[in-house]
Amino acid sequence: MYFLGGLIVFVTIYIAIDALGMMVEYKSINMSVWLAYYGYSIPDIVYRMVPVASVLGVVFTLTALGKANELVAMYSIGMSLVRICVPMLVLVCLLCGFELLIGDRVSPNFAKQKNFVFYHEIKKNPSLYSMVNNERIWYRSHDTIFNIKTLNEKAKKAQGLTLYYFNENWDLIQMITAKEVDLLGSNWLLHEGSVTLFTEDSSFPLTSQFKQKTVVMGEDSKDIGASANTSEMLSLDELSHFIKKNKEAGLDTVRYEVDYQSKYSYSLAALVMALLGIPFSVGRARSGGAMMSLGLCLALIFSFWIFYTSSITLGNYGHLPPFIAAWAPIVVMSALAYLFIRRVRL
Image (cartoon, rainbow, N blue to C red):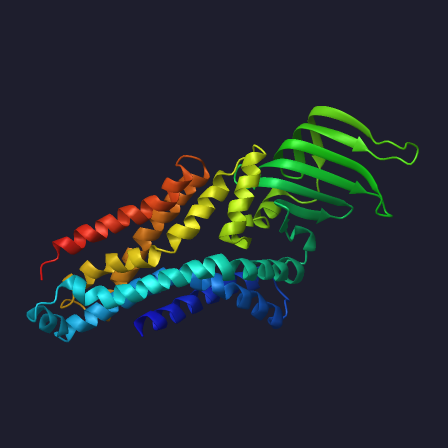
């Protein structure tokens, strides 16, 4: 009951805060559009909030048992703290499997629909809606279609760019390729590529090579990066295939590898959070009420989240290997939970 209640509360708070900001930024949007947008967002929000609700459920359950002296009764008949917590931990393990299922099978499909609603109905800029097809990210900008193999939003760089230019009759008139691109606002600096011209006067296209070339684009790199979060729209198998193809092409896949590993590691976050909550809730079972338990939950959530997001960020920037970046917080916090549980005096 504590878990379900906490999950509903935190999901509602998350949606309310996000909706307030969105509605201020994007005015005059029909309510049905917002309902569709947040309806498609629910699986991802639930995925993020399950660990939060898990620690709340464990802490409040053990605190309630302690205040009713039921923990003392169970200790008196020889039950250990671990034995008392086993049923809760089994349920949390099932929740971890549920989380992995949501992140792998449910969230990607809903993320595609959410992005479609956002760029078509809210932002009203369909050209920024990205779809992954044949291991590429595709965009359309007026009379230009272009695709990118990998996009590093933070570094403002892209790799594997192909630009297709069309005339008013949608006949292909020019194609530009580049191995690497610096996204300098609306000016893109292309490195090591080629320009191919298609003319009616010639049966064969004319191709020339270049070391560097600047092209002017209609979108700036920030909006394109925001629309190109490929990982959230791919299942684990699809993301693994995406990484493999890009590695074979010699492209940077660090960020995608971090995302791949984090899909697995985050599914265990609920169990880690629950383990962290056990020693603190038992040790303070007799001191303080619901507000102290809630404060404890928030402190544990904040500590874990800071550690986890910091590690993922270091991984995205290449300062930590992807596997270490995704799994170090889980391993370290689990070890801390084990030490704290061992130190609990019954």
